[in-house]
Image (cartoon, rainbow, N blue to C red):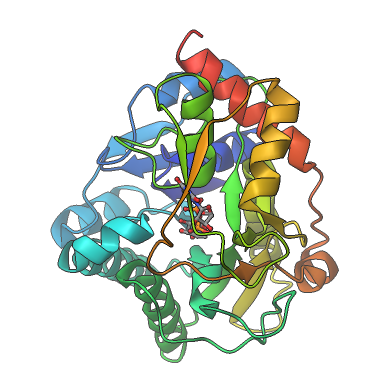
Length: 338
Ligand code: WQD
């Protein structure tokens, strides 16, 4: 069966392409290469021996999207990753985030509807919960007003899908990721942020490899045990597996609702300082850091209740925090020939 992965050369996308190929699916990737390199195709081939069909495509171009889907009417399902995804950047570029994330999603959904394709996995985010009240967070946690345009594009993206399902037999799974980190054990694919990393783990590994002089820890006065923010870190390989299971759930028509929502995390929270100390232990490298001001938009704590995805999809995280940090460090060293 042929599966379309939009944003398939990105961090989570590329790991999901590998997981799909390993399960025997034929994969077509579209990516605009705005935040990914074409060399990721080589990385995928190094792991699976197969190069997915690839087309560079700007999903904001409605006509180009319809032409693509018209040429690929045998696609059985779509995993939609393609979006701008940096919380901090979205605060500075709201219009670009709304244009890219909404136009891309709407054009893909419209083209799917046009050819009668109705199965989609949507890349959503725990940011829809804002500062949740009760930890661990379940899917019933109320949706809060988004703290960033990025988070709002995920909230409204979910609403667009729900509203389309009222007038079209769309079958969709919304996966609300917590914090994806790590890399494939081969070191052939991983997280390649462009410019200064926004996220914690690539910043730590770039500090360890000497690209950054020190890590700034954004605040030590949060309502947590050591005062630094607590997050639920999930290995990107485990996250990729969740996507394949969600798609197969739809292919087998096992979904009881048109739209199903699942939190995807490890179910355990770790603070920034715990991450730093774990990385130092795993890598044997001391990380220089400074405690600085809080970063706007950060919540104190967020970790997932994963009971639903375990019950319904039979998915469980398999990697430990040390696995995640060791794989991220291996990727950093390999990609810089350290
Ligand atoms: C983690 C913690 C920072 C960098 C991410 C994605 C978001 C969503 C959820 C998928 C925070 C602190 C960070 C640094 C630091 N995932 N930090 N110094 O903000 O939880 O959001 O996961 O949709 O899209 O962005 O992740 O890695 O940026 O921050 O102290 O240099 O590390 O304050 O507490 P975040 P993050």
